[in-house]
Image (cartoon, rainbow, N blue to C red; front, side):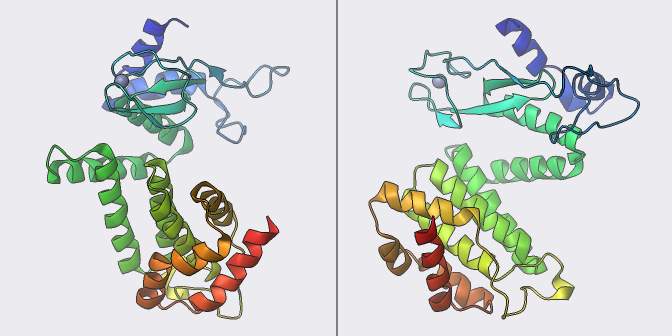
Length: 275
Ligand SMILES: [Zn+2]
């Protein structure tokens, strides 16, 4: 597909929520992200083809200013020339990986929300984004806007007593800090996230905020991030657990989860060493 064709598709009037969004999507994607058939009314993939792998249409150029890049971006990257963020997405409408601007990435995320049946949540998130953007002075960056949104979401989940959503949000905050290159604070946030995972955070406040004290939940992915950040920061696991526990201990004081940080540290250290 030519570049102009791609841009034409990306700029298609998906924001109207009208017929257009369902037309091209319905014909281009008849399996969901797990490769399952979506709707019996849609035409199936040809028997022999199977789920079609996304075509790689990424190019080594900034989608905002057009400057040539040294390499094709593999993930969200900041353009050294214009300072805008570049996003890597798989566009479900054309089944292709592309490098796009923030606005184009938003449109692709909307297309995925339609595919996955999560359009309501996506629209709510976009309206939250617009609200925060309008409330912050113009010199604040997109990263600042996202950070403010994450903080507001965290307060909301904490207030509702939805500790699972709260922990997931702490994990997103850690990821945001890591993407912004703020590795030390990312490490502190991942440790806090691991600490919350250990508690077995629950989504249904009526069932209690955490699983019973006798149960220590497995940590999972957070430990991998802690390990890799320790490596990048040239820090031992012991140092990290001792000196980068600021956020974890704030969670301990404010959320009062059943497992104390001193106990959790031992569990986290075991998992770090096991990897
Ligand atoms: Zn640029």
